[in-house]
Length: 330
Image (cartoon, rainbow, N blue to C red; front, top):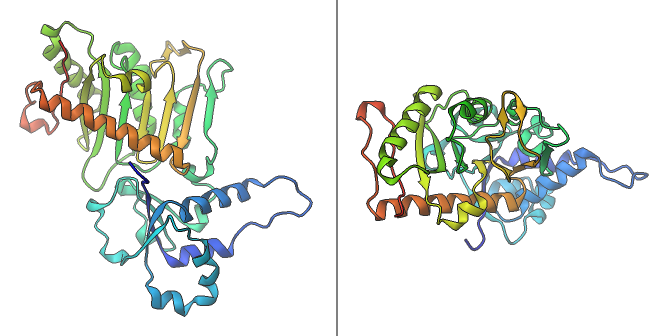
């Protein structure tokens, strides 16, 4: 992955307003205000290592050259720029990490799983406002429960949860996994279905593997109880070093959560671990790279499962959800 570029669909009018509304730095202040930090970080995201699809051609930019002169200077050589007609955008063909920067509510696509930001909500959008990595210390009681994820609820259309023990105990599933999903899954998806992939370990005897997978899948299907969510469980081999080392992540289109001791941490309302929980936004380039790497590793597990022919039987067609790619190592 040489130099991945974050895809941004942007209206020229948004960019002009963004430049015009740059926060003023107070001469007597030695530190940046929060608005300045957000503006500078957001500017860095737009104008570096991105592919920007803009609703303006050269003639339109030339027409507004007094306003766009400064704007054009902001784009670094690492940015690819392409003209696009917003009325012809195919949502089903978009990169899942696409961000929309809009000046017209007509082009907001939150209901389809894509973050859409206007000048009016630039400083309140959780993707942008959390410019620093957010962390909560369980030891200091700074994270009271998965309900706190609600404030970081955001448009998305896929989620990967990798944790070897996330499905081991039904009581812990209800108190942890289901609360995570409750507070982070979108209320509905209008374009297709939400893709939920859970990568976990299968500790059962090999002869019991198929039964165990079907039982866990059926249980998940019952408690999620949503027809607009496709669920897939990948049972990770203990020999897979990547997920053994980095196997406690939750990623969506735009965020990454990491906790060193996993996500089955609450029992009977009490936290059982002393650890730190990290929440990272894709606005930070390192997080974008991390998310892409986790997606790649997930795809590799899936492909290996297919190659060794270890898929378990497909669930009945009328359920519209299947268990597949059960990775078994003898």
